[in-house]
Image (cartoon, rainbow, N blue to C red; front, side, top):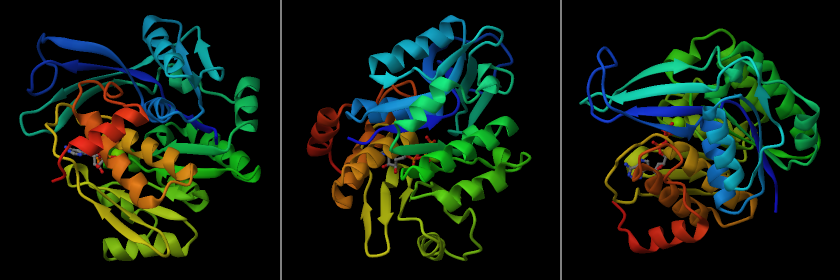
Length: 314
Ligand code: ATP
Ligand code: MG
């Protein structure tokens, strides 16, 4: 089985119990939940049975321990997750507005995430890796940009593959260096996992189909487009497939993209036919939105299969 590694942020998420606007008065909160897009990805891939590891850093605090315990329980290799004695573990407070938009209070830029370095443990993890997954959110910090590219180049140079979920909200895309780094990562990408407008990153294409074609022409082996409740589509130079979303009651959409991407990537690395991988990835994404907390809905392969078999599609 191919080993997947990732590099990026680990944080806790603390959620408001009721929808509303922001955090300007005392409100009931639930959390901390383990989180961070790359951490959600490896937790889900590991639950499916893929060997996984992560390069990151947490603080010497309960938010860090909560995440380390969770990743270890899911059998993720945590040997390259450093414990920063000075900075706290990252956090995100999130509250949904009545219209579904979200307000956040982040402590990420000045958290342990800012101290992620390539240590001996990280180099050892890379040496044993077959695949690297990168997420756009991890590219916000300038120090992470060079590091992510270095790791991508190392994994590719030893014959490994790369998946990239641009996950680039407009606020992030305009930070210094983010777009250029995303383009450099894209140039090394084998499996591209955009959502919505992100498919246009790095192209001048007028339509979604033209953007997909441009990525494939430049050497991306497969593009998988996430469409929220509407499901997803898969494109490689020979094949185009779509799968509808599964009908579920959405409780918390955070983490759906990462669970979807992890399920697809793990199955793709095993050589699962694209149609099956797409269907099970849609099921993994749908399962993720049925639970509160970014990784709480991550299922095992048996759970994902059972869900896909017993739930209607939209
Ligand atoms: P994120 O907010 O985590 O970045 P994303 O935009 O990357 O998410 P989505 O398209 O929201 O990704 O979700 C990924 C996949 O999960 C979708 O392609 C779909 O298959 C499934 N999914 C997401 N939301 C729902 C939903 N409400 N109902 C059914 N399936 C869903
Ligand atoms: Mg996304």
